[in-house]
Length: 369
Image (cartoon, rainbow, N blue to C red):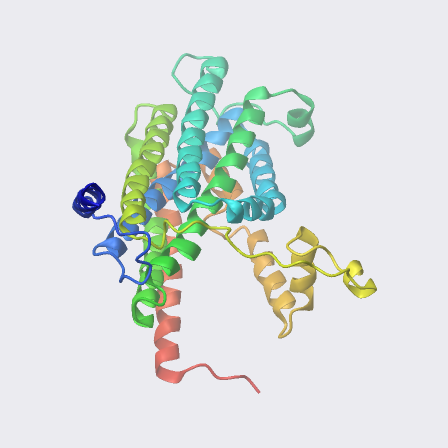
């Protein structure tokens, strides 16, 4: 009995010094400083990711000098992978028992893909650098048609596309986990609704600020670097390193909050009865087909609104488009000027959101008649 009491006291002292909550104390208030740590980690990763996303289309020009085929094809492949494999990855993420494991996989994969992309681009530059200036000349080269590009075997581009697919899936995997799971688990039902709403609002503001500052940082780094490849390497290394503080702060929050350490996937199962004929005709629950059926049957004109919103991505006026950024770079516009153009588009979005929130506060939301 004395030994057991001593062991319990030693354990309490040890974990108390580390700021670790008891796993059984699931009703405790959010740990002190948990919100600030989550916001700081979100800021690091968003700045690195937005800088990376700005530099990628410009550097993809080096895989097909004088043509927009490489950036356009890369965008189609990566977005197609997110569309088709995103639900599967999300379903797998729901089955992971530990939240820390999910974040570790997401951060580690994104850091690895950033470093892999840097190595692939450096290899491509060394192979195609004909004049020895440390970069591929994308302005004076004869443009390639889509058929010419696709008919030739380009292993480095295929590797870059594969890395982009994995990075996009890992980014959605980790980002969704923090926003939709970690934040509600830490604050929901244990704080006022204003606290949870404030956390979501601040994370959205960080997204908008990173949308403006990330491209500007990347643009001026590429402009100040001796070559574009050196600038891209610096941005890639910065992006990879940004996941270290993200993981560090989230790991602290994980061990400080007992609710986060509660295993996931512990739902009770109930024996299912034999499906009826109508139920058998429906797509399996949680399947890719079920998501589309639910979306199509949604009331209130949701399918029409979402299709209309999706069609906006076909406009050439979007300042965040992969092809548009690559086109401006191919026309000789400096990365610094392109970054200011991208930041101005993001700033316009911030103004629009601010005006909308102010209008709702003053007039409220009214149904058109």
